[in-house]
Image (cartoon, rainbow, N blue to C red):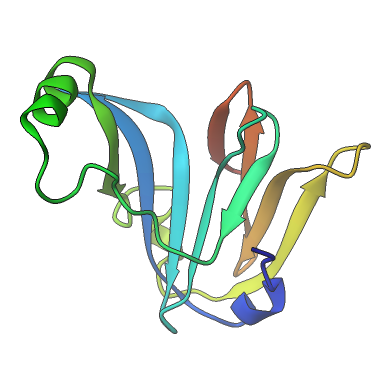
Length: 143
């Protein structure tokens, strides 16, 4: 799916979810996909691509593949090995201070190979970079 970046311009950030790997109570919070939700109802989801260096972008919300009725085998697998889990981080920095502010610009980060390796989101003058590195999705507020 091709993302129409213009559709997000002027839209206010309503919430943010991060998708982290969790095994029981242990959660790897340093890396993971990000899902920006906007007041219009739009969503911008970004995660590392299958090649480990590109960024996948989607206008669809992340769906937990284990959500709903799990088989006993799935329950045992998740208990032992863990799974990706969505966490609302809207009240955590660097996102808490951005809730309610508007997107000014979005710019894909391109490699020399024309591969999209990230995206910079300008939210009311605050820049948030999303990029892939070694199969992991990183999200950082730029100084």
